[in-house]
Each structure stands twice: as C-alpha cells, then as structure tokens.
Image 1 (cartoon, rainbow, N blue to C red):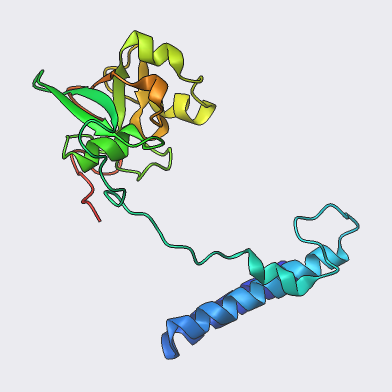
Image 2 (image 1 turned 60 degrees about the vertical axis):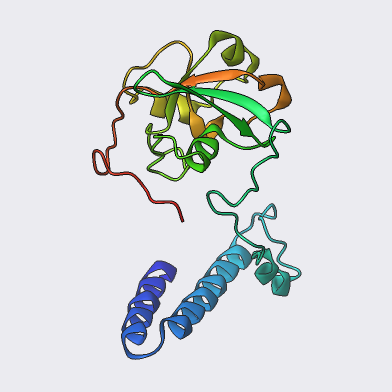
Length: 198
C-alpha cells in the first residue's frame, strides 16, 4: 500500500514540476520521501536504523553545503616541493610532473594536460584512466578493491602492474613512480570521447 502511495505522490510531483518551479517540486518530493521513509521506520520493528527515530528533526542535518573541489582546483606544488611522478605518454615520451600528497594520478595527469581520459569522473564505472605502473611503486600500493579489479578486467592492454589512475593516491613513499599511459582505452559510453575540465 505504501509503495502505491509513493508512486502516486511521485507522479503528482512530476506533474507539479511541469507547472511550477523545479525547486518547489524537488522540495516537495524530498519532504514526501522523508515522510514515507520515516513512517516505514516507525512501523518497522527493527531498532538499528541509520537515523534514530526519537529525533526525526535531525534527519535533515545529514546534508552538507561544503565547497566542491573541481579538477585542477588544487594549487600546483612549488617547483621542487611536490612528489615527482613520471608519465610515459603513448608516443613514448617521459614527462616528469610534481604531485600534491593525496592527489590521484588521474587528477595529476589532467592538471598537466596529459592524455588520460577518466570518462566516469573517478566513480569506478570505467577503465579509461588505466595506467601501467612500475613494479617497485606497484608493490607499495594496497591491493585494488573488487570494484577496481572488475573495471581493470575491461582495460585495454592489461598488465600485472595495471591500476586505475583515479584509485592511486600519491604519498611521499611513491616518489619517483612511473606510470605508462596505454596506447588505447575502452570507453563503453562513447569510444574516444574525453571529458572536459570543469
């Protein structure tokens, strides 16, 4: 019965969105969804819910309004102050750049205009940021997650030291890392499409 009411409300809210502002419809839908989930939790005999039912007003405090970092938003390290990383391009040229601690290889490559795609924006939904690392650096990294391994299975030119650039975060221990950019990628969304910096 609750799911039928939820679908009816959703359809009503969609109609409302076409006649009023999207913001009003979104607020109404959010409030409606919270009320439905609150009623479902109260009706449920389980007591281990994510939000305590004794203070329902605190449920809305879970949203964050912090600033969003975008590609290239980190300031580049001063010359000689960053972690040195060597990228080997598709043409075989070695390009040495400097990374910030905690910066991913994908973001580092993009900040330095290297041809690493990253079509899924680091959400582990593609293999277009696939890089082949040197053995010494590869051995210093933690094992890849199951999700990363699933995406690596789709990568072009997979090797024993392959990793997704979005999942390798730079540390001082990785100074001198060499990452080879494979000669091609497999983009399941649009082959050859490259996202723009934003």
